[in-house]
Every structure is written in C-alpha cells, then in structure tokens.
Amino acid sequence: MATINSFRLKGKVQDSYLECIQAFPLTTISSDDHLAAAGEVMDGLLARGKLDRGQQSYLDALSDLVASYEDEHFPIEPASDAEMLRHLLDAKGVSQAQLHRETGISKSSISEVLSEKKPLSRPMMRKLADYFHIDISVLAANI
Image (cartoon, rainbow, N blue to C red; front, side):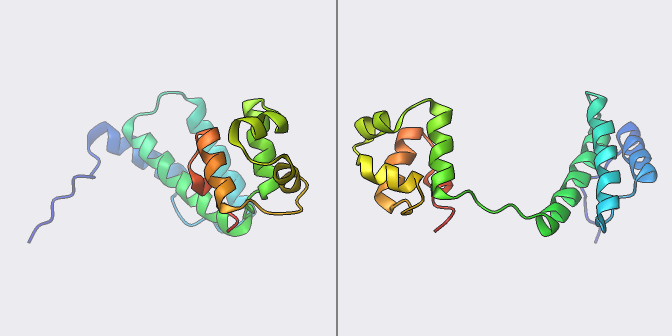
C-alpha cells in the first residue's frame, strides 16, 4: 500500500533544500566545533533575509539539532524566584511599594522573596501572574 507524504518537497523547493544538505548535512551535532560550524551556516541563511520553503525547512531542522545539543551540553537553570520577581518589576517599571498597593501582597513578603529569604507562595504566584499578565507556570518553574 502506497503512503502519501504531504511533507514531500518538490521542484525548486526540493532543489534549494538539497543544496543546503549537500553544503552542510543534517546530522546530530557532535562537538563544540560542529556546533560553531552549524551556527555559521544558520547565520548565513538568516543573513539572506527571505528564504524559500526548502531553505526554511532546512534552517528549522538545523536549528532543532543545535537546540538539542545546547540543551544537553549547556543547560540553563531556571531563574530564582527573586530573579524572576526582580525582572518582572523592572520590566513593568513598578516599585515594591506599588506592587504591594496594587496586589495586596505584604511589603515584608515581597522583600523576603527579593532577598531570597523565602520562596514565592502559591497565593503570591496567583496574584503576581494576574498582576503581570503572565501564565502562572512562569512563576512555578522552581516548584
């Protein structure tokens, strides 16, 4: 029984995709040197501006391979509660006092979180998520 593949590349799109593959084959990134070379290829494609569908498909696949290598070899730890709250305050341009007034979270609780003396509580996370218009999962990364 024949399978229909709707993701098949044809014509000029296939040609540009295969040109990219021939220049820099898609394979698991295996070293930091390989990562650097992949980065140069990605930068070159991005510098072109508008890419055709074949080039974009290639770039997407190469980006996934790079991300996989970086996730394994250069993991980024989640931000602490204090770092996250400090960032949200800075991004919105509000003070601790204003946050207290507008959310009802006590000044001492805000101060203790910012000085890393205590973590965000679930009720604080809910109020902060509502106040900053973010998904609560952003604040719950450390739970």
